[in-house]
Amino acid sequence: MTNNVILTVGNSMMGDDGAGPYLYQLLNENPLPNWTALDGGSAPENVAHIVRDMKPDLLLIFDAADMELAPGKIRIIEKESIAEMFFMSTHNMPLNYLIEQLEQDIKQIVFVGLQPDLVSFGFPMTESVKESVQFMYDFLKEGRSLEEIPVL
Image (cartoon, rainbow, N blue to C red; front, side, top):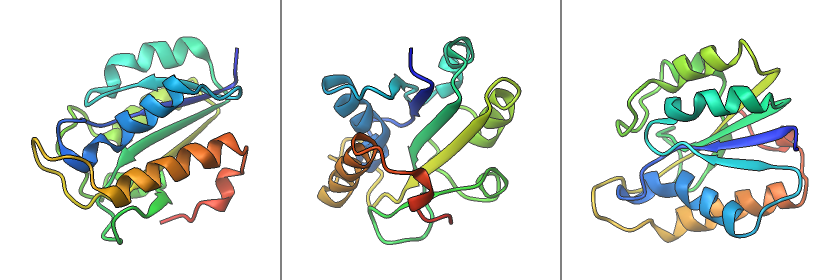
């Protein structure tokens, strides 16, 4: 079993909020040896017990996040900033609360946000966001360090 888990978050029916589910799809179709992927959908708290049971050394949470950047930009967002930011309203629970709950059992949690362009019901994901999700998949596949991703 791997020591790295990626929890993807988002709603594929909401345009660019589908970035997380799209990354999950890529990881599911072409699994990476160092990662186990879980799809949290719009209610990642529903799989928190699975994440806890896996006891990962590293949990990477990936979600669309309004960071007031150009569409497709990827940033690490520190837990303290998550509560202050406006996140997509497709989630049932604030992600900072979920992270605080998981920190009790997981050594390292990193939240990676991807700036969406269009979040609206029934719209497709924009090309810039699709390309950024593919970049994130390739980044993980190449075994690159998360420290290479800028911090917001």
